[in-house]
Image 1: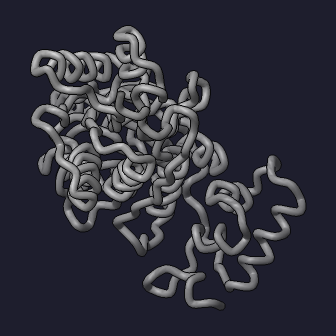
Image 2: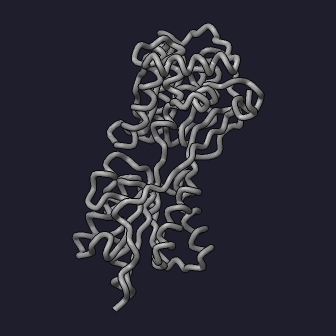
Length: 347
């Protein structure tokens, strides 16, 4: 057994089996649960790796389990990716999913907790704006295991969380623009109270400072992760630069793909060509990022994998397994497409 085939405590994990076998965690879960939608060759490879590593299958209590997936909204493309990732793992384990939307309000979260207690769910995956200490305490008191995805603020050290390398992803986006020759770069940030937004804004500032590039006042604006906010932030940015008699930015880094699409709309309405006049970079790599014209350069946040890992971690907790790593950060990746190019020469 190699040193990297186990977790920090030496226990063999589903992710380590998946890594050695060259498959996804959800595929390992399907093999463990006897699903028929795995090829014989893949099943044999996974089982061989489990035998080689000495993985001991535990009696599973997850089949027939009910898992709550709680999101702020159900109608965004971001939420759809999370739902897909969770559903794939739960379906492979024979577990059911209950979807809830709390719309970012603590009162709705309290109402959901009442409903959770009534239906006796086996666990919960929380993708919410806020989970207060009192709400966390109630979940613990009900003996319901839970996992947080992209938590907003500081979280108790014993609460499992799954996130992404937001800071590093933002740095890679800005380094790409700087490497193309851009020096006048604006940032359309997400909600100020969210950790992921602040991490992306910090990454933007870090890359600019390292390149010794100034960020004019007002060129970082905080909004929401949606296209309307992207339109509003971009319009304010262009109006501000015009009022001051300044040159507009030659590049925009948006904290989400939807904000980037809002920027696309306003920039074109104002007569800017993308990427000839203004380069645009997003964050998330939603499927729509590949369908835009030009296709959107963006930072891939592995939403499906984050959701799958959260679901797999929760199922292990439901089975009574010890979770070795409580803080998981999955790597982001810059996806270079047609919306970025070197800045046009100044006339």
